[in-house]
Length: 478
Ligand code: ADP
Ligand code: MG
Image (tube, rainbow, N blue to C red; front, side, top):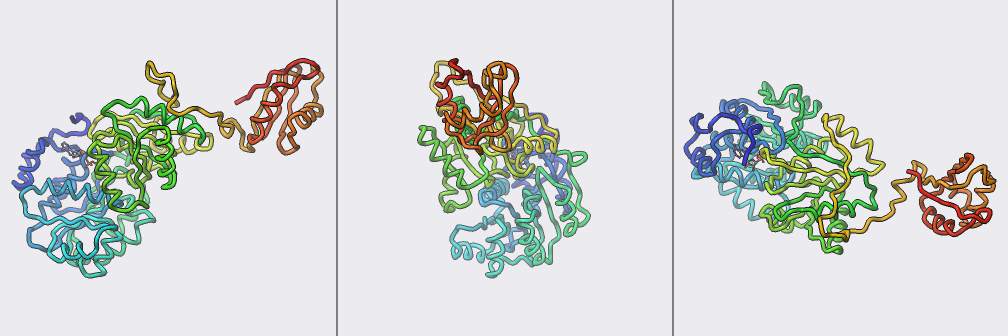
């Protein structure tokens, strides 16, 4: 199940861990710690602050979870708080802590938005030792007096660089300021941009850094490829990937907007391709149902925003598709890291339009990755019908000014000139001045630029027109 590159040769039973935790681990069949666990757990158990960086799917949850559980007493007082960027991740982390604690009678409560406040308040008032949650609801509950941040001594930020970026930093500062008795702080992520480490230094002192050399981000062994495809044909390419899926493959498809999640899910269902969508504007109970069903393997294809890019652990995910290339370089690492977990194999496809080429370059340069171009998978043997038909995508062959270059089989030798060619298109295809760009004439051929909105109809008309009594061959130049 696990590859050598992720596991260490340190056995959990060498550590003299609390027996409840040891029992849980052995019941689960975990004998060896992963590398990040082997390094971080002994440090954390001494009560030290830890900044831990390790690749996606390498067991960071237990790296902070085990010491967290061990140092927490069953006394009804909240002692540890773990903060994550999304509700789904809070739920997942909470579940992992719950099985890790085993028979230790700790109460662990998840605290995130979209759930019944009154009920949650009651639970919290009843005495909870560990809280796992998202910033908004944690702040809310603490303002209402149901979480006493002053008394909490241990703070963990999972996906710490995300928690300390502009979106969440003010919330985290708010929480930090209330945690006047904070004794231990642990930050974990697969990515730690330099500026985040600097920000962390302002509130965490003397942290032991457990990370790869030079902050080099390690990427699991995921086969990464890109397909050059414009907006019009992304669905066609996705159709090819979908039809090639095996029975036990699962796939996550990332888009950049919530609206695209909805649109894409609808469009796929029109083509009888099954997929479920997940984004942050959905009602919480629906979000929960969908992620659970996906985790159980009942749904094979999840279309989602970056709400599912970080932390989500579904071991059946074998394929990740960047339907839209992510806007920030970190996101790429986290998205593709939904596959290839614990040394398993995975494939990541990125759809790259002409406009996205620069962003792809930036991603591969930042992480020192090769993301070679590839065609979409071929149709399976015996299948001749495309799941989704391919369209002519003029935007992809047009230049920055929206002009498509058409090559004509007539040139100076046939009496063509800049003037009479422009006129010819003008009268025959009714193209106005703006629809015609540069015209270049050589001896036996010429090139005419036509605006992408007009080129299709122009080609249709001109195919039947004669030049000096002879038919003309027109073709698109890329
Ligand atoms: P990360 O947070 O580094 O992305 P996770 O904590 O989500 O990784 O762990 C990835 C997967 O590996 C999870 O399914 C987890 O249960 C499993 N795992 C973690 N540690 C071990 C271990 N020591 N032995 C076997 N499996 C493990
Ligand atoms: Mg994680």
